[in-house]
Image 1 (tube, rainbow, N blue to C red):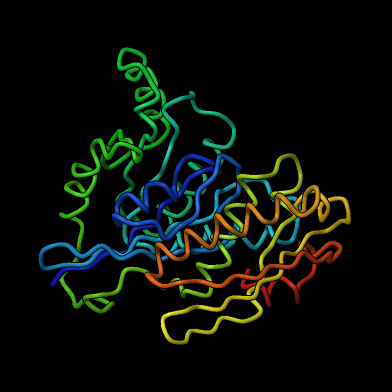
Image 2 (cartoon, one colour):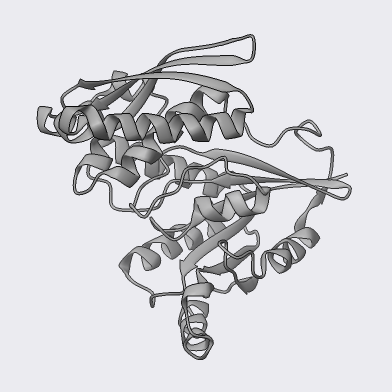
Length: 294
């Protein structure tokens, strides 16, 4: 039996969660076009012949402006420091920027403390003309002494097999840490909250997505039905109005889309009831953050 932990690292919005979902073959991490979508470490286990790979999806490395963001960055750094192998993600649609350089600095510091392989994973190659891809790869390739460079598309699955192939030699002998049927450490309760938050991210703009959290008040399973009661937290009354929408229409759409996704993933009927509540400055509240799991 062979085993390794792989931290998926990079600045915000480079496609870390999309890559994790592709590697697993199912969606356990929410995705959006908004930066800082992922707020916690998410474990995804890929079972390979005679082995396991534990992937750690992490929040984007960024300059934190709130206590929430500082906790997010700390979570990413902790995963970076503990993993056996690093996937460092860069976006093929742009040349290296300040966020990428900052992420590489974190990687170099971690490798200096404890040497291990670092694979440069250049994402979103399906969005780039092949003739323009080579200069991008060369630019990113110069940032660090990468163990391997693998361009991929998590949307199409292009080169994902190669990414796993270059990972396999770095698995170490040892027992797998997880059961044969385990895919993630995310509970149904946690996944439900994240699915609601994903629909809010997709439905809102400006500051609203960053000021939203979802608290699952109750989650009950009985006779093939999940009854879920959730509270959406925002920081201002204006944000509450935006999420609820005219005559409650936006909240109804958010709830319906989230419920449909839950039913698909959980394989059961879902009754979902959602409220919106204002809790000022919750992103700076130690107790609130801990209660929300951040």
